[in-house]
Length: 275
Image (tube, rainbow, N blue to C red; front, side, top):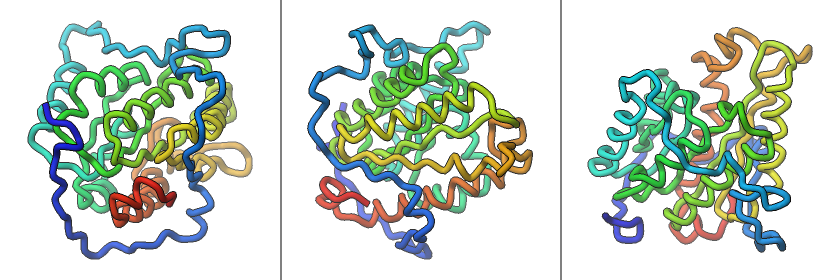
């Protein structure tokens, strides 16, 4: 098994992409500078009162249907790690997986030498297990985009945020030269509802907790999907959860701008300089 520090990163030439992010999108990015760990030293797998955080416990998906599709996808991703040299790694649930089916992927992300390790239905526990079991071997991406958490129905907002933090912590440990972009959870449901409130709370916890890691950024575009009356449009989410081509374009442009900016940094700048 080859580790990130042992891999040679090849120079890439990217033509036709701008290197600046529009001012309105800069305001949406929370840049997280390194700081000292919390004084209590609590691991993200532990919550208040030292209770074990179930959203930060790695576990595979049970093959309830009997076709082993989830494990087959994981095995394919592990094989891709042996064959590819990605600069950008996307990992998460269906929000990541479906992105690859739309034009924005071919237009904005495929030219960045990106891999898509999204599996529909995944929770933080499932993504954590996948990354611990081969999906980070033999690759050394410069950026990892993490988008997961909306499927953690059995967990509280605090637990979900702790699970996301545990994944980000694993990524910074296994990929010491990479930057991590955590995408905020999007609102869900046509009208305001408890699940939408929960996702908003998760994003709030992440803003507070992620700074301990350094080299991590939160990109939250959730506000762009809620109209003044609190409704979400079918033009953005066809089932009030998954994005349409229009919805993906809304979130993809600021993400693409951010990735281009990070990729143009030197390795030293990626280590110490916030975007």
